[in-house]
Image 1 (cartoon, rainbow, N blue to C red):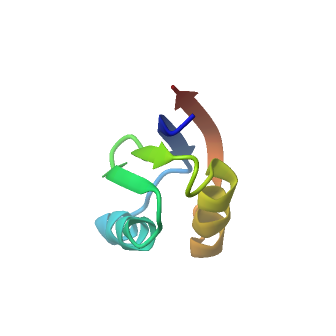
Image 2 (image 1 turned 60 degrees about the vertical axis):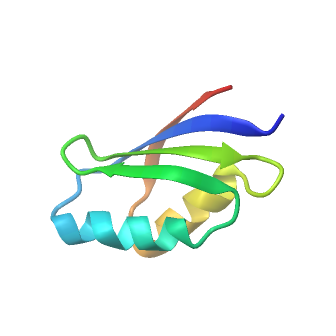
Length: 76
């Protein structure tokens, strides 16, 4: 397996700066592309190369930023 589409549901984002903070943190990670942080829906959509990174690592990053992941949907 290589590229998968991942959607992560977060708690409500309180301001647009949260969106920028998440975008910056994830854009520096290997294996992630087409990262979209959807402020109004409090979701993150991205493409993940699971040979370079994994969902659990992304969840750890988001938890450290203060944005716990509520639900993850993966499509191959």
